[in-house]
Figure 1 (tube, helix red, strand yellow):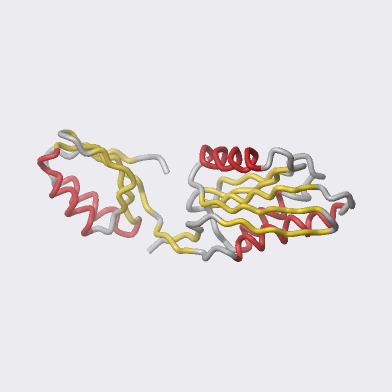
Figure 2 (figure 1 turned 90 degrees about the vertical axis):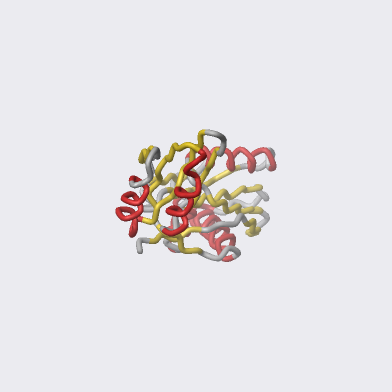
Length: 200
């Protein structure tokens, strides 16, 4: 079974260094849109903070990522945060570290350490979980074959991601990669069911 590691809870941790206060927020996220939403929430909550630095990694292979220093010296905030995400080998996670300047200059090595420690502390509060890598499919079908569809979905350990159940039903399911071929064969056997692959 193909798996990846992530978090499924949010958490906040606080770190202080020479008068500066760092608040680290960790969020489980699935898309750049969710990243933007969570960043907006943190900025709204801390409008007077000096910096809102962050890093994220997305996708089951962890190929989509970004690290932002938000005005701090280049490489002193986003990269240390991303380094903590990578040290846990997790993906679909965003860490935002909010900094309130306290008067004493930390210097680049001090900033690197502070952002690294803040990210490490917030990640210690959340257990890392294992998830199966799934392929997404969009199903369209008449309500009369709902039981047949749900039987295949359950027997093949699929995840129902979204559903709209009326006279004509639509559903997005996650199919475990290990059993994808067999599951698709069973779904295609159901008369009147339309299947379309979704982009990851």
